[in-house]
Length: 125
Image (cartoon, rainbow, N blue to C red; front, side, top):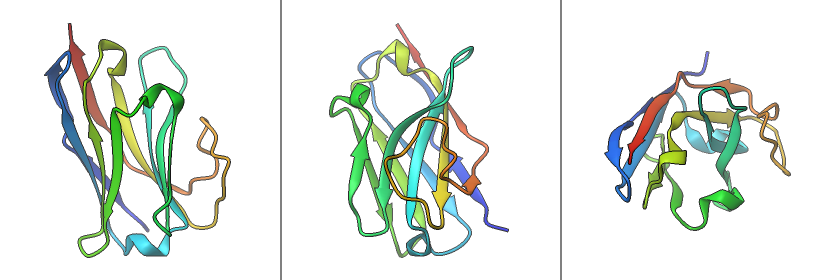
């Protein structure tokens, strides 16, 4: 069974930065796509950023250039760098992996087969 383990979340002030990591139990290049999602309390899950196996990326509109998704193929880690954080970025952030899914990518994440347990990001005003 594939395992995805997120880390790197925490409490940060407005305008601060964090780098989230997702360590994967098998080679990340075996997945057609990997993504970061987030879910805030009392809100629906939403897509943050996606990276395809070929390295192409897609960011949600609300990212506005503040997030960068990247991947270390040798260490099997997916990253999400978050910059200029806002209080509305407060959420649980989840890593997801898809064997064969293709875009367009939904906020529901039904295209993704495997999910991590999440890492909490809290932005204080």
